[in-house]
Length: 124
Image (cartoon, rainbow, N blue to C red; front, side, top):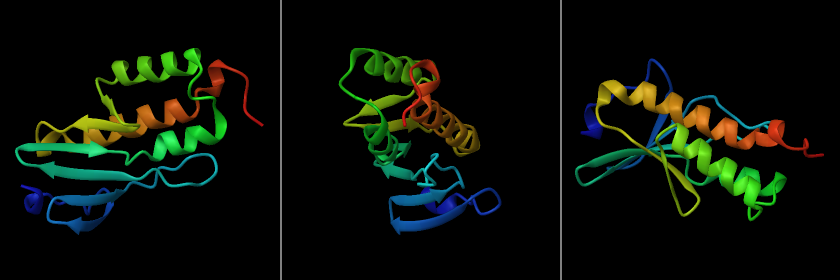
């Protein structure tokens, strides 16, 4: 299925393996660290992953074990109907046609998580 997907008009992509593609969306965090997005085919399941890049970035700014931070993360994951697995944001892809929408959802969720200081004190 992945071989039939052409994202070249929207994003720069790089094939990592037969079942993984890196999508370079141009999205980045405040420190210019790019938001890494992977499109992964695992048997019959296709999903997007941030490859833990959001949590790695957030770890520099927030006390991730704090209950208010955990609650914010959980609320955002739920609001976007995504999943968190071992620090990785996962967005199921139900069809190729929905892929651009799914990429946008992942980007929006990730950037809101990274910028949640708007709800707290801005990090220095």
